[in-house]
Every structure is written in structure tokens, then in C-alpha cells.
Image (cartoon, rainbow, N blue to C red; front, side):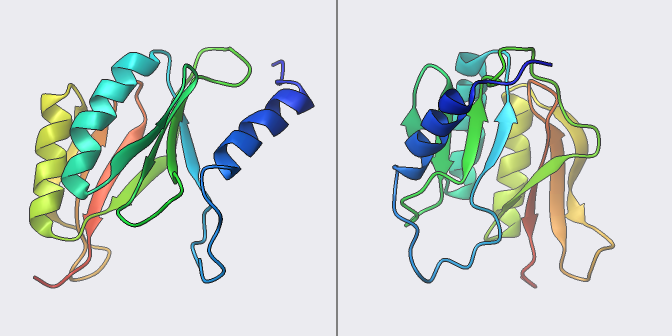
Length: 155
């Protein structure tokens, strides 16, 4: 598998890092997450329909990537990209991205919006055995990437 040149990777990293300074008190474990797609326009329509129900919004767009951020966050933390090496994007076996949902109703809305946008159902909204308040739903996006929305409140 051929990797993108070091200069190309540096340019892409800089474009993402320039979208907002990292606050000194940012204690996030992850800087950002990327998922590959074979059709950026189609993926953009999917995520534009699904992520707003959780409060996330599209903040960046180019011909190679779309970035989404949470309310009040100046940085894109979730990216949908065409693979850097120009090979076909494939879903990772065992990989999943779980989005925080403020309420169980938001989990329900995420699942409904994802299914309406063409996602495959991987587990409808409901309590899971991880702990007493772990309410989640699971889907696969149009490229086969597994996604979840999780609310951990006791509502």
C-alpha cells in the first residue's frame, strides 16, 4: 500500500490544526477521528442529516474532507475523508465511533435519522449491559463504518 508523501500528510495535518487553537484546558483524549469514504458528497449528505440531531455541525469542507464539531468547539473533531493514499476506503473490523448524546431522545433521533439516510441498523436504541444508564443505538454508515450514539444520563 502506497502512503501519501510526507509533505502531503503535513499539509493535511496543518489544514486541520489551523482550524482552531487547542485551548490550554482541553483535556480531550482524542484530537480528532477520521473515517474514510469512497463518495464524499454522499457521505456529506448522510452526516449532515445525522449529526445535527446530536448538536454537531459541519464546520469545514473541501474536495477531500468534511469536518464536524460540537457546539462551542472551534475545532473539527470528526472528519470524513477520501483516503490519503487514494485507495478505496474500507470499514475497520472492530472499529466504531461513538458520539455523545445529551439525552435518550437524542439517541432515538440519531438512530431514526441514520436509518432514514440509508444506514444499516446494528442495534436499535435501548439500555445496554455496560452499566445501568448506558443507552445507545448502533448503525453502519453508507461506507460500512460502525457508529453509535450514547447517552449515559439517568433520565
